[in-house]
Amino acid sequence: MPNQFTFVRDILDLGGDSFWGFVAAIAVWAAPITGFVSLIGLVAVWLERKISAHIQCRLGPMEVGPHGLLQTLADGIKLLGKEDLVPDKADRVLFALAPMIVFAATYVSFAVLPFSQDGVIVDLNIGIFFIAAVGSLEAIGVVMAGWSSNNKWSLFGAIRAATQVVSYEVPLGLTLLAGVVCAGTMSLNEMTMAQEGWIWSWFIFRNPFMWAVFLIYFTASLAECQRAPFDLPEAESELVSGFHTEYSGMRFAVFFLAEYGKMYVVSALGVVMFFGGWYSGIPMLDNIGGLPGNLIGAGIMVTKSMILVCVQMWIRWTLPRIRLDQVMDICLKYLLPLALGLLMLVALWQGILPGEKRFGIVMIVAMIFAFLKMRTMVRNVMSKSSQQIELPVFKV
Amino acid sequence: MNWEAIIFWALATMVIAPALAIVFSKNIVHMAFWLLATLVGVAGLYLLMGADFLGMTQIFVYVGGISVLLLFGIMLTNNEPVYLRKLVKRPKLLPALTVGALVFFVMLRALVSTEWAQNPVEPEATAPALGMYLLSEFILPFEIVSVVLLVVLIGAAFIARRDGTGDPK
Image 1: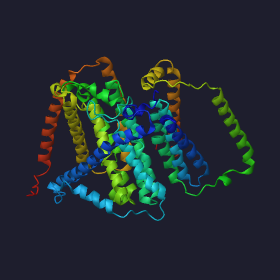
Image 2: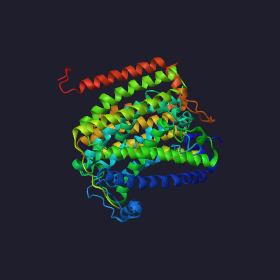
Image 3: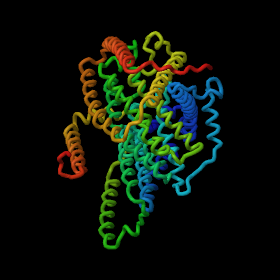
Image 4: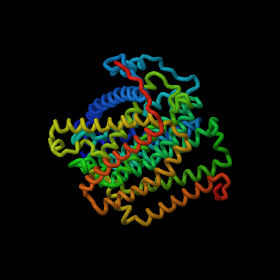
């Protein structure tokens, strides 16, 4: 019989029509994703500690494994062994449920994220909308955690998170719409395929306004992930640690994992929308096909996404946290009108010159020129304003 | 029983059980979370019927947006237990029952008189068709709704001003 459940149609082909086949198919697909999310968490936490350390002229974890590579694993084992504490007056059910909801909201997005041409679990025709929708569920878990902890710092953190996430969904949605306008589809796979070819066919180069859209997307996604400079929900210096103040052990680890998973999801979405997904930008490399082609594609996709994750970390350890009123100002007074205007310009360009790829060359040249110009300007200002500081050098 | 039926009954339970829990719960924050479960269940039913875009919109707008704002409001109010028998007072009982029964019969009538499709059609992408309809056949209602929403937005912002007169300080 025809199945109506569009979402799991592809999964179902594996399990046939029986219910248990369906359940087994879901389990088969869930296993690698669980592994991937854990691996991303493991690597990203290590990267964060290393990047923060090097930015602050420290070494970071060095003891466990080469350059502390296994430190996160050791920490994970420690968190597993910790006592599971629940505050006395907490709402026990909601308290237990909150980390699960936060994690599930991130985890589900991986079902539609493409890794390579055939490396996507479900190529949903509304993939980008799906990710935006389930991403907004995270706020529910955060609010639940904050309220059920019965701690005023937690509640403050949760309320900040709710305000921030709901507000930034608006500019984020508009930037996603700009990507949809460029690609003419909401399927992440088709969106990537629209950027096939040389590097200048990527949307960020091809459309003269997409780089600005990307900046807005990136800012809004930082706020969605509650990363610095938008980390008010867990501002350590004000709210102990915000909505997860009362969480310890494995429950805290789940929150942590969800945060890094979410960082990967927004980065991967950014890569698909602006940086050509799994395409390397060199047609010869992309046309290999088959298993090797898919493996190369997945490697490129994960590398690009991890680069964006590293940029998120770089920003976190560079910029100070902003105030709540500034958060709202940035969203409603600047990002929202800018995103609206850019959406119109992007649509206009797309309407006048659909499928025009060669303009990307001009954009790439302009970007390189702007970068070099900016670098000399910054260097001039730096050399004038302050004397050179001798940085300590570590010998390993 | 095939898997579709199992999922349908699971989702139906997920819609109805929390709805009952909203009525009988004493804690207003719990009520909000139960409402959320109901809304997710409804989204699941939409998805089961092949209305993928509608289902995701339900999650995006109701679960991710409106519910959060609802919770936001509730958490800032006092947290006293709400008792059903205190809410239902005797003078209010008769009109409440009348209105409830009326709504119930209207919905029952709609349920009985509708010709439900017996042979399910193969699901297809609904988003492009929805977009085409919104910008061709239903452009007038679509525009009217957007203007009404804009008016609501401006009105709410006006009322929420501290002095209510509308001149900026």
